[in-house]
Length: 209
Image 1 (cartoon, helix red, strand yellow):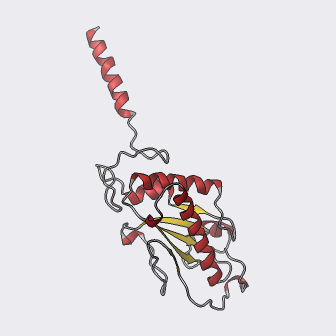
Image 2 (cartoon, rainbow, N blue to C red):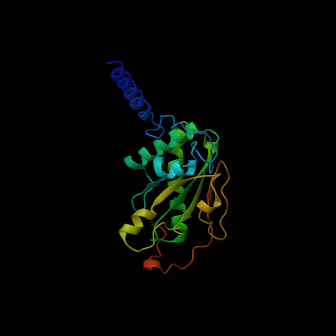
Image 3 (cartoon, one colour):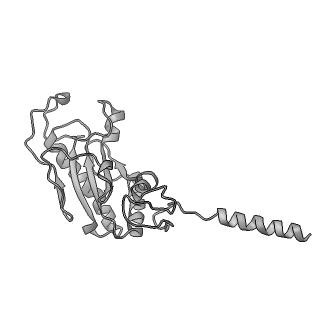
């Protein structure tokens, strides 16, 4: 009987140990992950960096409808998780990149990408994240995530992406030549003359992807 009691106690301790959760499950849950420096291991085994957690667990991007910059319910859920992540790591700063699909002129899409990044930033600020921690930049249609000229590709390119400022440069796409780097508290938008756009035959100034 005594041996049986010892075995039962050991099994209960094992179950309790296995129930400890170190993964991100919600915007207000504290992750049991050590350093708060982007690009460095965020758990004792070095299995994940903060950049990994943001991209694969929290979610680093949201998507938009055609020629829109308003936030869907799904986008708001992702941004709410991002706010929880940023509250846990108060020394981390980020840049939100606004992107568009290939339709429309370069100039119009730069403005649309700016509005998308600004909408995401405003939502995070409304949730209590300091505005000085969030920069924005627009790449317009210059940096598609998916190549293609159909809705499958376009839907993945109409996005904003939250990027850790201290992440490895190997994880960042190079800026478009001639781009203006964003300031810490303002909106940085890639500017330049709008070329004659042969893409899809669109020469409209009032429409973009």
